[in-house]
Amino acid sequence: MLNEGLDLPNVRRVRLINAQFFKDDTSSHGTQHFPRNNCPRLRVVECSFRFDANADSELFATPSDMLVALQPVATQLHGLELIAGTGNPPHKYGRIVSLAGFSRLKAVSIAIEFIEDISCFVRTLPRSVSRLYLHIAKSKVVEFTLNGI
Image (cartoon, rainbow, N blue to C red; front, side, top):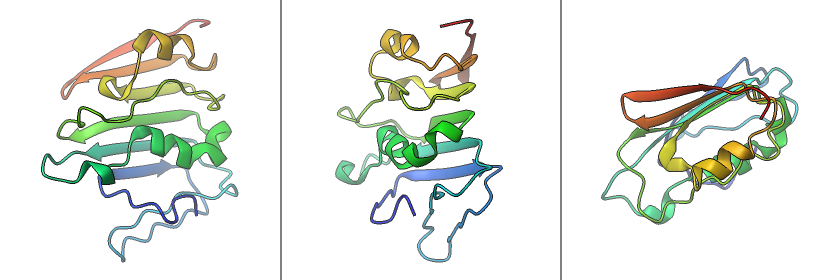
C-alpha cells in the first residue's frame, strides 16, 4: 500500500470516492491504506487534517505528503480536496507549490494556508481544472471558474 511505513496521526479523514479494490483497516489504530495502482475507479480524494497545538509537529503529515502518497494514482483523479479540519497548521508547515502530475483534475478544493504562493499555484494548475475552491476561513469558501488557464 502507498502509505506503508508512514505515520500520519493528524490526517483526520480520508475519503476515497468511487474507489474499488480499496482496503480500509480501521481495526488497528485507525490505519488508512491508500489504493494501489490497480484501483481503476478512484476518481476523487477528500482529506482533512487536524492540528493540535500540543502535538509534536515532526509527526504532522502535510498536504505535500498526501500528494506524494497519491502519485501512483495521480493521473486518475478528477477531484482533490485538502482542507484543515481542526486547528491551525504550524508556522513552518510544508506547503504545496503546484499540482504538477495531476493532469486530469477537474475540481480542486484546498485550504489557502496549504498553498505556498497562490499566484504561482493558480498559474501552474493543470489545464483540465475548471473549478477551484479556496477555503480562506473555516466557514468561508471562494469558488473560481477557470477558463483555459
